[in-house]
Length: 138
Ligand SMILES: [Zn+2]
Image 1: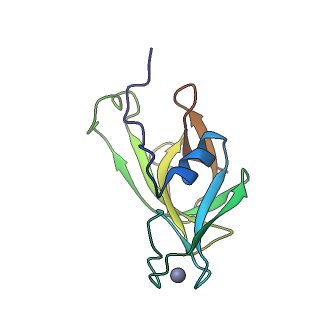
Image 2: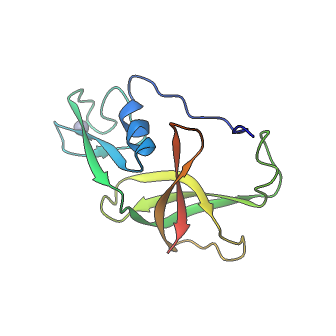
């Protein structure tokens, strides 16, 4: 059966992020002016407004901790009915503490999730050429 959930759209600003995800890697946008990382990616730096942006590949070994989370007990979109309860979390990256990435935490019971829990990024192949970054408890 084909993938039933929404597939993130690539655009001019974010396609390097999703292209990396499709290869099971994380790339982040970095401002050449103030050297800050930014996520989600945009046309200019959220901190200084600089438009000289580059991309840094952080590879496949991505660790972080749970900064905040919610647990959904009913599906808000078609395709999620088998994932309930679904944990959606904001993850603070270990190597780049200013950057937080939202994703689902897989294979985790709702009573086990906690702020500060260590997690690592994992990628779920959702179509032949697309993969979705998600998180698993370490
Ligand atoms: Zn900047």
